[in-house]
Image 1 (cartoon, rainbow, N blue to C red):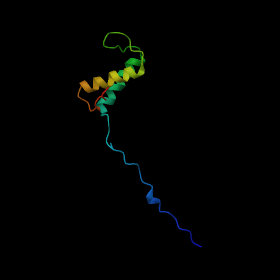
Image 2: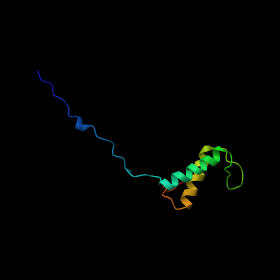
Image 3: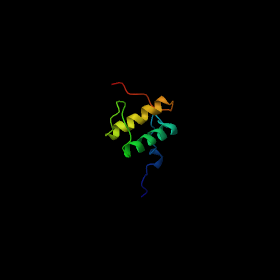
Image 4: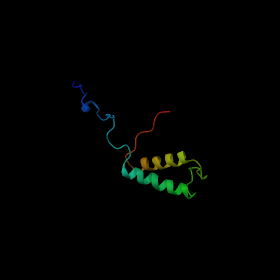
Length: 78
């Protein structure tokens, strides 16, 4: 007796709404540079204090990339 098989083509890749890169290579290198500063303890915030949070360091890198004209997603509304 032959058993019916479902075709394996029914499993397809998830189609994400954004198939393109969110952050440009320029933005990635800018964030990388800032993270190295942070890891060496040389990164300072706008007020001159040392940055202690990894999240804050990434935010600084992204905002610097944005200022330099790199492709970075818009800020989310608060």
